[in-house]
Image (cartoon, rainbow over all chains, first blue to last red; front, top):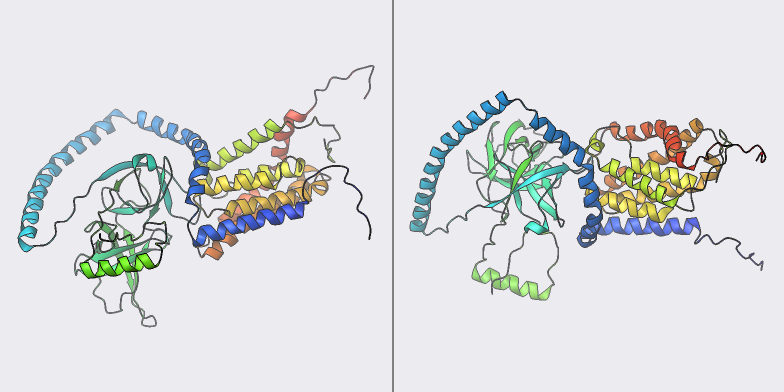
Length: 310
Length: 173
């Protein structure tokens, strides 16, 4: 047995040991984050440090933006203001009419015994920046836990659905756009009333999957939310069909859609309040309650949370 | 206090707060909106590699790991993605430290290039494993530019360590 000489300089653990420790730690974090989504607390804690640095980094861009709008010519502003004024008047008439129609609709629905549609309300948020990740279609908005934003809330702009809040930090929230690869929105074709689900492709387009080759879909069809998911309110425009390829070698038609809302370019959006959950029918609720008692509830990502009925 | 081939001048010991400031500045540069442009180098990776080559005992894998986590949170990417890449880069930098410093600046940059490429490759791999879309080749443009910036970076980050040149006639050394 050979004796090791005493170390002259204390240098901590061997570099290779340290390397394997950190690599193992990073891999563990990766796997846990990708599979279980239980690290939101750690993320929020770290964001307390990164958020000030990030907002500092975005100061120059904001400054430039402000300067540009400051120096915008008065003439352009005047025409814009006149246009807005005219638009407001036009919309006022439409709004009054729509209020009237809505009231009428409500009455008729009551007569028919159908549950009333819930009112849509929300809060306006400003987009701060898009996530730096080249693979993700996500943006950060300036409303967070402080403003009672919760994960799962739908986000719209003045034309249609933009995305969904997926992560909430103390001061900001992360919105996954409908064009993100992992985002799916249940939709309905306006012309035929056919229901389906539209998926993001990650390149700014959407795809209507699992539609049979002979499905009645035409180029130019407008897709609106069907509201079946319990998250997105029904009737908001989502996308327009732009290209249909019915290749008989595939089982399903390949239908490409373009988002209606300015999904990739906008500055202000509206975060809609979460829809109040619809109570399940009696027998189903009992079944679910029984199941919940047997297995502990799982998942922190609010996808489809149906409360059990007491 | 390490001398390099091109300059035999003896440097002052580095001040830890300067290292901290440079890392924070690099983090800030990474958070700038410009970082979505193709070809903008990963400043933080570059500075981490620089300090782990220059001062492997001050800037190690622990710091790289923490900074990587900060990047992950800011980027909304998978937690540990940047951390893994930066830890590997810091280890590589420290392991090759003696060798790299032996060369003139231009050749140093050539040896640093694989480390910077590794940072991008690791993140690329992580995404490929999660099943995301792969980005174009522009994604790998960053390390090239960063390599060209290496001599400039060395000049700037070593400035505070240069000794004032006042020769004492009585003491030639």
